[in-house]
Amino acid sequence: MKLVIDTDVGIDDAIALLMVLAYPELNLQAITAVAGNVSIDKVLHNIAVVLDVAGAPAIPIYRGCAQTLRRRLPDDAAHIHGEDGLAGLARVATTRPVESGHASLALTDLARQFSGDLTLLTLGPLTNLALAIRLDPTFLSHLHRLVVMGGAVEARGNMTAITEFNIGADPEAAKIVFEACQNLDLAIELISWETTLDYAMTYETWRNLIHSDSPTANFVRALTDFCEVRLAPLGYTRLFWPDPLTAAVALEPEIVQREELRFVEVEASLGPARGQTMVDYRPDGVPYSNTRIIRQVDEKRFHQLLRLAINQS
Image (cartoon, rainbow, N blue to C red; front, side, top):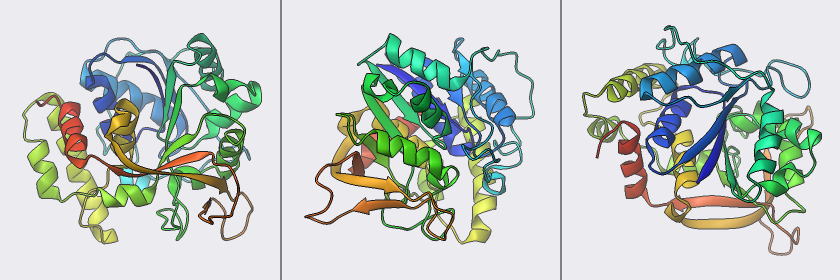
């Protein structure tokens, strides 16, 4: 499998990256950075830190958009992920270089180079993808799969009451991406916030998964301890892993046990519904779909892939 990851590396992005890096027979072509959980400079540094923790070979890293399409800094999630985006663990040096080209240009070039054979996994705001579509309107048509973590398909948000963070951070960009899939055979494989909630796990279950003393496990354990401290005051008693769940779907499409083909559009107005992913559930609604909403996965296999992320059998 040929894969590109577009990410705004925070804690769950880091675990998703570790899962991908540990997966056998995978050809990770590049990692593109976008501002989201933290600023673009911190995201770039965090990508390199995670690659170092995993002992990964040289993988091209590209700098992407530092602002949304409306030329503003997106609201970050440092209150969850820490000021550095990695629970304070990113305060280490790294020598991994950043490529000279822009992430959106890299995406269009790679899509054409591996036309029909490239999976794009997105774990952050869709700004880089929207820009890639504007640069090359045929961009998405060259992809084999587009797997996206984002959206609140039942209006149970985590950014606002009805808005999920990755979509809400840059609604204009998300609108462009979803609209571009309306006239393509390519449907977005969407792992929503609600599906993430369905696969929340207790801290006890998680600690049983990360009982190894490997450097990777120690790194992940520190991330988790930080999450517990940050999430407890917000009333969360379980762990949510949206990005690792999305990575699992990208790596093994057969892990999906139930999905729905739906038409989804994004509200980009400046009103209270800004960033909402609006799903047409009507039987006589829009007569075509642009999204596969992933509803259910093989939970046992998902946990096995999480173990793989920290080098456990």
